[in-house]
Image 1 (cartoon, one colour):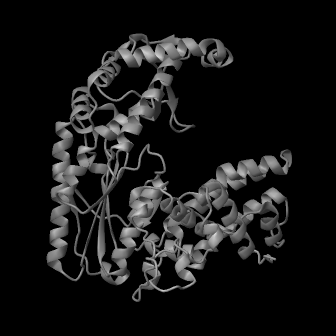
Image 2 (cartoon, helix red, strand yellow):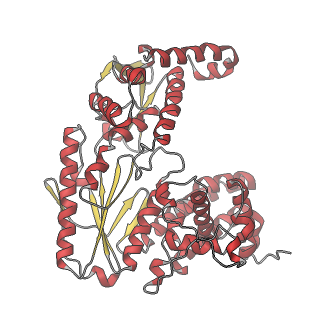
Image 3 (cartoon, one colour):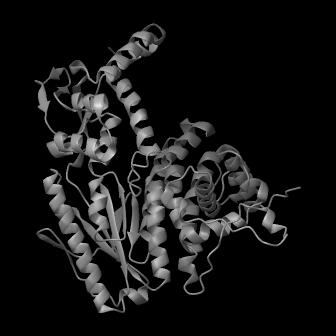
Length: 506
């Protein structure tokens, strides 16, 4: 049944749909006619020939199937959350988690190590077609053994995974049905969740070798710090990492996953003085010997050897100016509101993506991003390039780049203190203990402990563990005590806006 028709007749169809879903859940079965996926190939890159490697299969499932999967997802997610069964360091497809929170924690750990004159070995593992090779038998066993999914719930998942088919539609032609024996269902909200649970064994393997790991779906970050002055520590760190990767490869082969050796990258991160002491020339990954990279793309962000983030900033600026150029070409056909929508979609979203990682960078670096924002403001307000930009930013009620960064960090702090942030972010913050003396500050229970680093403070202060408490404690008490996220964001933006533009608070 077409989705638009269902939406239009929802009031009449809702009782029947509800009954079908309940019968499926109660009986522990998933109807066979809901298991057929309609796959439509789409070009990955426009302007390129429709080669097999340039096609992305888009899997379309039935409306009733998606509704049922959504209901199951909600219940399974509640079960996993309540019983704390989610892998702590897995950030994919979870509420309050994102690529930015994952990168924020990894960068925090690396900066703190750099502050202690230690070097970090960061390895980014790449899996080949990870979602398509999941073994259903292994998955079902893992759901039962590790996550307590038994009885008719187990039967439902067994029925859901088995006997699935798909056909390919191109224009008006439809292929024969193909039986799907492996992989999680594509186009389903349950597919990503099942893959996360399928790969949960990865963390048990890594814990035997390394202290730190973070994953986002099939993107895995392994990192280990060591003292560059010690050749023994360097060798031990390299050996531990290679041993960990070897065990991961063995497990993946057993569970029908495949590590892409050629696309696995690693980078050595530290201060310039410490990097010259490192003698690691290669990392053995399976049959391949991988040389260290000068920069790597990690969950959409570019990391370099000293965490200067210049490659990341330059990439943002290049892409943003490209989109501004295209918007400028059609500006005469648009009003200010339409232009603002386009700018927010193509430019501002990129300026705000993972901008919490940019705290503490030199002004000359942040100025590059500020130039992008200024150009966007001029385009929306239709003013000349030599006109003063402050009135335009004020008119649009836009926070300058450095204040947008502070806004993001403070938002993460608020969420962490109020239980709506990942636990690995909340663990970095600690409230000040109540004072024995009747001091004015002792009444305020929402002040955070602040770590002051005496050596290489520019590195230590860039970490979330240091920057978060520092910025938080500077806020007025009424903002810190906001009762909801919405109220906090409104108060915080007003406060930062007044500071940025020297607006009188009276």
